[in-house]
Length: 368
Image 1 (cartoon, rainbow, N blue to C red):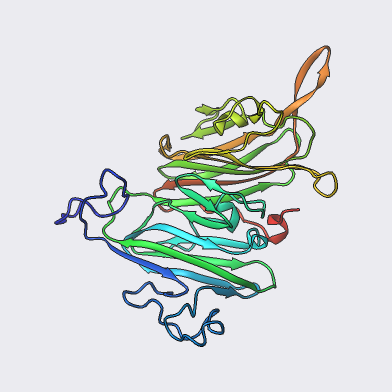
Image 2 (cartoon, rainbow, N blue to C red):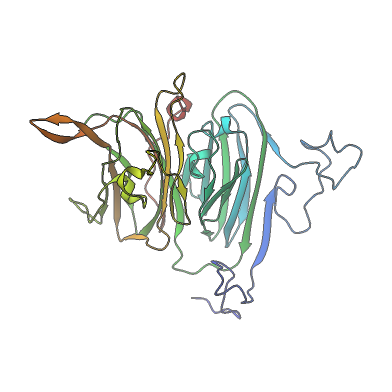
């Protein structure tokens, strides 16, 4: 590793190293400073705030947000490295959370390392606001999306947003804060991928991740799950196939168990117990109202930060959709379900990464 006058590069800060000096330079990109350059913020004379700020002039919130044209892809950030993205904040109306696609590219790669619908990246896939009080992802009233995933890069980092529909997306606010500093040789790259089974085929499993090639570690799962049957839906097991496994090395005992709950997430009053903790949660329960809402919908996350799942060459992750069936021959039985499951997975790995499967068009992403 290259010798440096500092023992700390300023990345991966925590209370134990927060006092250490480093050579890192802090920069931040937003609509008020689209390049992140030093001394370049708040200088706009045109923007979405120009009309309401017309009597105040330059420096007074003239460009706080952007509009994204129909079928347009905009670049939110284009950063020369080395460095690390440390915090991403953004907000837009919930109706856009499955119509906008977030992508991130590291070091001039052609295929993105991050490709998900915007809301799902922030554990909000149902286009209805749900707060999240976790360490890597925090979602605060009213729809303030925050990501603290550390995303190192060596030559370049590029973040884009694609509008999948013909309507103009108005009022997209964002800020990406990063540090410019040297990156350790053994630092891996951040990845996130979205997949959906809508509905899942009978007797099939939902694949969260497959085709991963390289060394790395799996760090997170978010599921937007719609139950299409009455009764309990979460008996299914999650399975991690590591490094050529035919049968999984890691096999869970039930869906609620994997997300840190137990016994159907049930409260004593016969209701779902909603919770949001630093590393795991059932933070969203959307229930029928007797008129237009016909299915129960759930949002669940588990971040494997204290317990990353490491792999050396390849990784495949699946989950079963399994409920309770009626009794047969005097005994209960499992019932394979055909639920609507959308998963967002998060992991770090060495590059290059294997190509992602196609995300699909707006009809595949749409909440119906």
